Image (cartoon, each protein chain N blue to C red):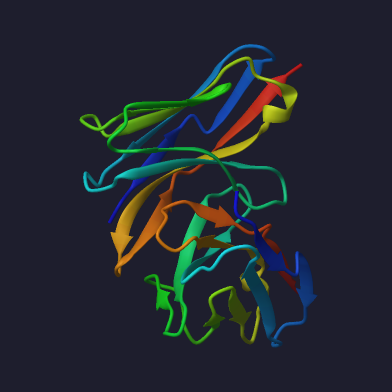
Length: 114
Length: 115
């Protein structure tokens, strides 16, 4: 099955600086890569996603890049703000029993230092 | 985005009792819903895929008789933890996918504590 690795596990950046979180996946058949933000005690919230036919996608301060050959994708947050502090999960979509199921990375705890 | 509502958000139950958690898609139909379990400071672990009108598909190592899943309508899936024990204490999260789309939207999660 799919295996997703995520780095770093914790990340602290100064407010206004950029943050980068990286993930690698193992299944070359995976074709959908979402990123989720999870705040304490809440469910994950989809913040951006990318499909395998696209190399980069941007939404305001958030961007995701995908390198299919190397099987890795990254989340970039620019001009970070205190409200960006949360745990971020990457995921990859692989087929299971006829349904698209998500395999999650281990998470990155991002702390924005005011 | 689409809204998935999960209820209750917190529940405390005694060992040996059963607890039901509901997951509803509020503004869309979801043939497929997913149930996850998350331990503190860990990632989400998929427990099972809930299919409307048919049996759920459980991941390896998940006891289907302990975690009963029912997906009786296109907007509601339920997870029942039967004969709960303290080791079942965890954060349970559901997600739903709009039919025909890949994006998955998550509920708020349910914090289960078994005492």
